[in-house]
Image (cartoon, rainbow, N blue to C red; front, side, top):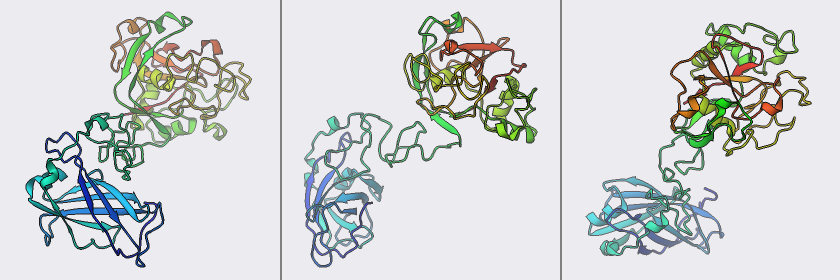
Length: 426
């Protein structure tokens, strides 16, 4: 919370209006509570100061068993007055599960209020249960129908923080989908985040060549949906990362230690943060398994490469310059050879070098006719084949070939100069 009221509580008053204690269960259960607070000298706190309020409901004046406790954080004080919608904060069930049940099951209800860590205010306020019959339909304010909403003027940050997403509300389970599902201000805090990986959200896109400039196996353009979010390496696997797998005995070394213009490339520490090359599909798959990851499907790769843009030629838009990617004769410092990973700007999902630098192996077998029969949801590629798909193009390709839909293929046991990979994890 922003400011704490540390002084003693000297006075308070209670004004309670029941604005949604519908027992039907469809409307939020809320009480509008207003109170006054002063410091030890009887003065109100400065306008804009905030308090944490804990409301506890009891079945009798002297009762010490809580029926329900509701925490309202960061309630703003203005002119010594504050207002809170009880029931829209953090609720801890006692002998009752919700605010409506408290009033349904008890003739009289007594409420105590605690400010911050101070003792509960006394005397407890007696609230008759009669007004629960007054009901206001608040369903129109719950735009996404998840039972949570953010009332206008509420001072409770624990209200629904996104009333357009039904899976986003206070106390929701973090779904690892790029959203603040539980409305605590942190995105995906409980997800198994992995260093140098970014989360790609679920979604649908048009896969294939939109410009009639590609080869036939980039058509027809077809709708594909990636139904679950996944993590993808932010950059291509580097020489140093691959060397760790070789050192662990889980991978075999690249078949060639050179690059297009460098006699020694893999094994030279000057190129540790450059993409590994001369690895086959089989070696790439072994590395991903060692890292507890996997190769992406071709659909995942193109969806991620597009970075959320619809129908564009490149991961960043419809035009390309030497400042966008590492391609042949682009005027970059690398002279038609690899560049260090993360040198160029990432796409909309935070992924680097989705075009240029090196081709990337993906998991799918290749078939020139697969796009015509591909399923909409999570297409796995053909069941068998002779070649595995390569995506992304390399530093030795001309920019005119750099459509994000571009596909190539090669036997899985062979390796090449300018071919590398990256991994994903569910």
